[in-house]
Amino acid sequence: PNGKSSSGSRQRLVVVSNRVPVPKDGSTKAGGLAIALEGALKESGGLWFGWSGNIVGDASDKPEVVQGGKITFAVVDLTQQDYDEYYAGFANRALWPVCHYRLDLVQLERSDTDGYFRVNRAFAASLARLLQPDDIIWIHDYHFIPLAAELRKLGFNNRIGFFLHIPWPPSDVASALPAYERLLRGLGAYDVVGFHTPLDVENFQQCLVREGIGQPMGPNEYQVDGRRIRVEPFPVGIDTQAFARTAVSGEKNALVRRTKASMGDRDLIIGVDRLDYSKGIKQRIESFSCFLKSSPAFHNRVTYIQITPKSRSDVPEYKRMQHEIAEQAGWTNGNFGEVDWTPIRYVNQTVGHAALAGLYRMSQVGLVTPLRDGMNLVAKEFVAAQPPEDPGVLILSRFAGAAHELNGALLVNPYDTEACAAAITRALQMPLAERQERWITMWERLQTNTVGAWCRQFLSCLADSAAEAEEEPLE
Ligand code: GDG
Image (cartoon, rainbow, N blue to C red; front, side):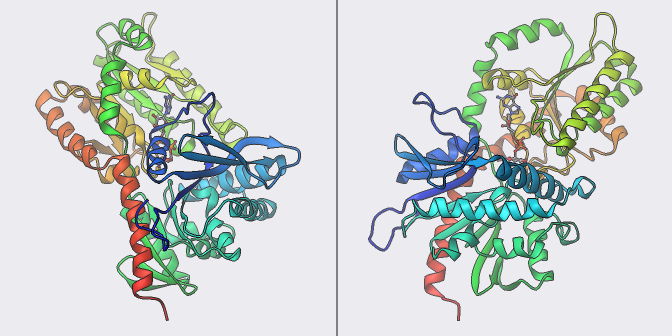
């Protein structure tokens, strides 16, 4: 999409992600990120490759190819063993907890580590069937760290970039990963490695240097195993204008109207998260209980809606957490609720996109308090959905990547339940002028740092890295 190939034609973009939004019945159903990637793919005509989502008895390495307009979608299946070891095992029980600083939840199985590298090798072999020499390749997320190294082994010299959607921890934490050095060298096989925040970049650089794997070559540039890599922050955004429009039209949504009617004149606090321990939902409910305890004047004056679709239910840590959170919510309602008032409406359901945007818009407070989060798009969506004449207040964890950008939020330490409770009280009492002042700085930021800008910046960095490599080849 950026730059020309040696033959002078536009280079094709190849995107790799674990799940691929293959169009069904001629239409795609995709979130903001998928839409942005689709936009980039359409520009040059592109290929989107990944897992089909299917588990089969005998997986073929020949991808199934579906044409959707200018984009070619190509997917492969996994066997049950692949899924258990690569996905539920190494990706979700080793990489996910370590990258979210949760060493207490790490499960190390040698077979999972082997499975992770084996499946990456198999993905590389399948993708190799479709690749052209000039393709520019953008690989997404923790499922595919070793993919570039496997492609290099097969002889591909293409420009390959990697973006990690989750945090990268400091070296003391990261080194708890099995095959730590191999993963770092795997990341060294990319031309550009991108993270959400400067902190993630700093942590990763520390890992490269401490392990003696990367030699600094210049600002954000390292030499790893004879290759040059760039390591940069690219904070992901949303399609801000489109989301704001959806929120306005979402006010007319039937669910939003029914919810509004059921609230009476109570204020609304909203939380939206996949059911994941990184999101700090249990601590958040504790904070809300603490708020109710310390502020009786707000009893029956406020409702907290927590929308929490289930996620990764086949991973035991997630199952355990589902019970804990449900118990916590039930306890709070039993303890503080009244016959005509349920303090928390806790739902394990997915809400439609327009309804969600409409619910954000009618909320006085957005509670986004992950214990650790790469970025957190809910925080950005909440801000984008607010009415400028009467904006709600965002309470945001300082451990979300979004905290680096959204400094108009009330930043909190999510482990400090009393401080979070005080922030809820402050948000509910905040004067209009202060709410507007805080909101406008965040809104302006979200106008610039959109998901489209994120895509363009990453791809232009990847294209520049190619130009630099030609100008100054390594000895
Ligand atoms: C990973 C990183 C990073 C949630 N419930 C419903 C619903 N959602 C949508 C939200 C939002 C998205 O899902 C969640 O995105 P987040 O960014 O908050 O979190 P992760 O899923 O953990 O994403 C994260 C992200 O990748 C991008 O790089 O920001 O740090 O962990 O868009 O709105 N959407 C609808 N109904 C729901 O019930 N329609």
